[in-house]
Figure 1 (cartoon, rainbow, N blue to C red):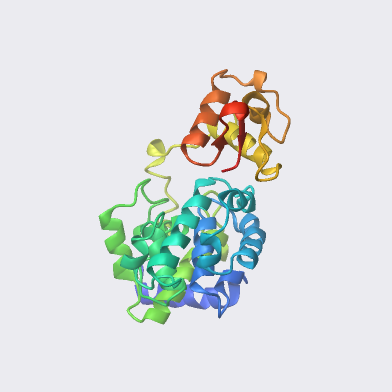
Figure 2: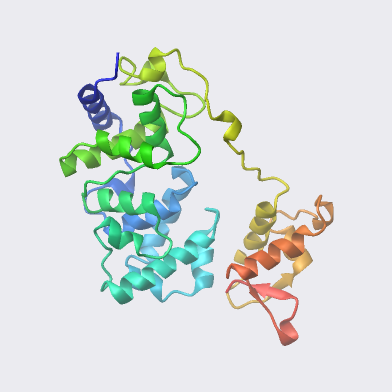
Length: 307
C-alpha cells in the first residue's frame, strides 16, 4: 500500500504544532537577516552551539549594513568555534552585497537569494520560506531523510541530491504558501528529533502507520558503500582549527606566534607529535590563501594574525 500523502501531511503538521522546539529564529517578528544568519550558522553545526553565537552576533550586527563594515578579524573572532570559518567571511560578503545592491533588504525570492555570495540552493529556499513565507522546496538532510523513508521506503537518501528527488519533493509540497512553510519546518524538526539517521525512534513517530520504510521492515542503507565518513583527528582541518583558536585569543592587531607555535593552538598540542610533519606549513598556507589569516611581511615575516 502506497503512503497516503494527505494523511502524512496532516500528521506532520499536527505533530509539529505540539513538539516544535522554541528556537529564536523561528519566532514571529524575526528579521529576514536574522533568519539568513541562522541558516548559514546551522550548516553542519548543532543548534546548541549555534544559538548563543547567533544571539551575540545579532546583538552586535543586527542588520547587514552593520556587518558589512566590521573588521574581518572581529567577524572571525565572533564566529568562535562554529567551524568552517570561511562561512563567516562569506556571510560578510553577503551583507556587503545586500547593503550595496538591495538597500539593506534581504531578497525575498529564491533567484534573488541565489545571486548573493555564498548562498546555495538549500539556503535560498530556506530563507525564502522561513523569512518571507514563500512556497519553496526546502531540502536539508533531515527533510530528505524523512521523505525518503516515509514516501520511498528506503533507509537514507542518495549521497547526492538529484533532480528526480527534488521533483518528488516538490510534488509533496502543499500549494498554500503558509502550509508549505509549516510542512517544510515540520519535516525538518521530525528528522532532527525523531526520524534520526542512526537511531530513529519509530515507535514515537507520527508517521509510523504510513511510513513505507517501517512497513518494509526497515531495510538497510542501499547507498552505504558510497558514503564518505569525514575524519577530524589528525587532519589538516584539525590543525587549521588549532591555528584559528590560537589567533582568536589575541587582539586583532597583534601579530601572534610563529607558525610552529600557532600549530599547537589553544589546546597546547605539540606540533612535533603530528603524524605528518608537513601539516603545520600546509594548514597555515591554506588559511592564508582562504583569507582567514594574514601573513606578516618585513619585520613581521614569519608571524601571523587574523585579517
